[in-house]
Image (cartoon, rainbow over all chains, first blue to last red; front, side, top):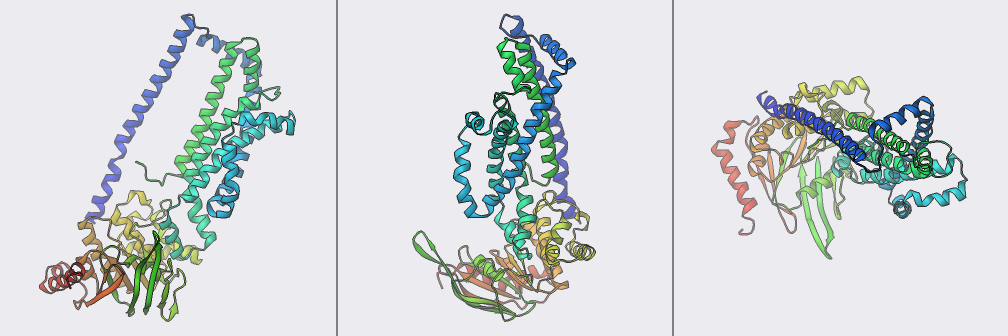
Length: 267
Length: 252
């Protein structure tokens, strides 16, 4: 009984300092944000050609009241989400197949590696010619960006599954199907989630480029048309909105990650 | 009964043929506790993997109750040095894993798992994740998990190699306590001479290059074994014999 108590103690003790570290991080984060806005404001008032924070807030108010911001957000978010979800939905099974079957890996990997080196922006001319100027090419480039990010890490996840876990499952009577669903899938979940986060980042990054393709609405489109009129506050509204939305979605994924991969030993 | 029949295992290594095991033969009776001790590179892990069905011999064969080993099977439980617990499953779910693959129903699974978790003294930790357990506790979970599928043979590959010396002694006591309640044929691999003598009724000493059995030493000390026995002259004498067989292979 005494050994049990002794060995269990260190795990419990670790928690308190970790919470303190977290509070410290949050304070530092807040300080950094306030200081950043301060620097921006300072630059704007000292003659650099930037809108001040109140000007941007005022424009925010205008774009919210006339409904433009909401419509733009809906349009952009729809594109990002459809592209991203499709990308992940295709990347996860393909990544698994690549990791599990050497043949699939040999067939798919050159294409993945090749397209990875091409920025999604460079695909746009091709996408327009092949798919016209509707929603399809926009969603396609976002899809491509999130697929490429996610497929690599899913593949890595499968390849990195600990051999001894596979052996342990086999000696406990697991056949290939059991091995896959009950060992390989859970073991590679952390990698998939990291891939999804990277994929989400690339989806947002590709959004503005995608909305270059003759869009009528969307945050990227709004910023490009503002550019024509030298309308800096609107550009700022677009930038901040994209950043904040991306951040919220990333935090949601992070939350899912902590929930789903809570079993991992973290240093 | 386990029959190891002239097993030879070699594989190419940097353009040469490396002989991990050169014609090893051995017979084990039911419910025997055999420890295999030897220097690194003597092929003891290879031998265990062949018995487990995770590796195939180049020639010769392993037989369990007259049946040739061709792959892993539920009658042979394996305990690995690195614990190999599924980190995303609780202690209980880990122990239930093999039962689930066998298609045992939920209530029955739970009952069996509880029995073996209790047997290794981890009842309080049944719903804990492996990351919260110490090395010694993890290995006890692995032992419970191997026992749960009711194998007739337990193959243990340096199971206590990664824990500290004090925990190791406790785990040895506990393993013998578990084994005396649930008798199985045990093949236990170690590089610790004391451990080999304390646990076994036979110690198999192996040597390297090529991997082979050099001596088999009977340990005729009565079970249950305790601390008193560890310090007895009879134990010391056997320990010295095994020690000499392991460490003075060249000079003999």
